[in-house]
Length: 390
Image 1 (tube, rainbow, N blue to C red):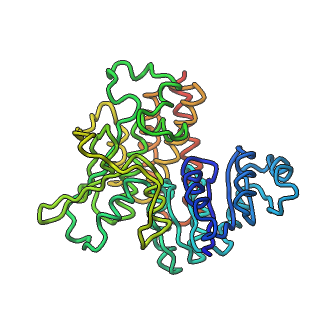
Image 2 (cartoon, one colour; image 1 turned 45 degrees about the vertical axis):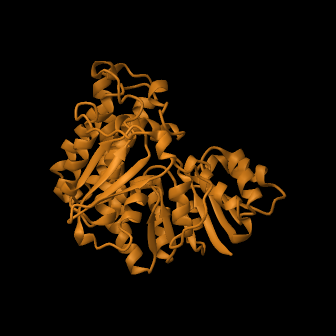
């Protein structure tokens, strides 16, 4: 039996991972499940999977978790320190699906113990890609991509020489507002931004899809994970969400990865790697689909993409500042304090403020330094949001 843990078990990626594990329970020994405020779901899954440990990120929800697990034999814990401790428990494979920068510390801890880390937490690579990759190399651990785009690239590169790659194209659905008149975007409501045309995802990532901030993060993630230059990374809007990525080679060949819009494909590939095993996902009927559409992203509609390339050009820990500012701006929008289009303006204001902070941005990439940049960038973003309110 393989020992596995799932961080972010109550989110969409975590739930899809649990779905696959439940289909072959005899193959897995579940060490730990972690979640947030959905205590009922966390406890239910921990009991069903006979996990050793369940952890909520919120200290004040520990009594509720203990009550929900009473008599089950599943240990309960809470808080950031408990998440890191759970990551240190021996496991063969860990799903990292905690949303945001909060997933960095547990992911690093898992890699220190030589674990295979299936990374759905793109923010970790954006904030501290070099630190993650070096930690994995130093400890004989492995990082496997779970974002559908990066899993597609990873599969397209199997058996290939990265030096033969000319370009990598990642696709984007375009989100909820891909066909809206530009002048209507400032009036977009939270409910409208929270409804994705293709995917059933959590609120935060759905809004990030509408603003294309998720794709901006994925552009940086592509550079960090595969080591290609920023000018080799392209983005295409692909409304059908069936082609997840394409890899272009120096002989003109362009290899595309196609699959149903189902995250269990990328999760299952990472779960079973290096083998392929049967997955309960839809098989595409290309004759029925008939056609696939692509278009270049409109810079005026998706300015977050421009910011991603500026972040890569500046280097250092600008990725950490970018992600923190983006997360804070998203919080401000969800709280109703700024408009949808203000999120980019707030994030850009933070990047302008930090771009000249060489002593901060170019400091050694350690967890403490990344955490410091994250904290300061959130403060700066909150201040920038307040100015827009005023």
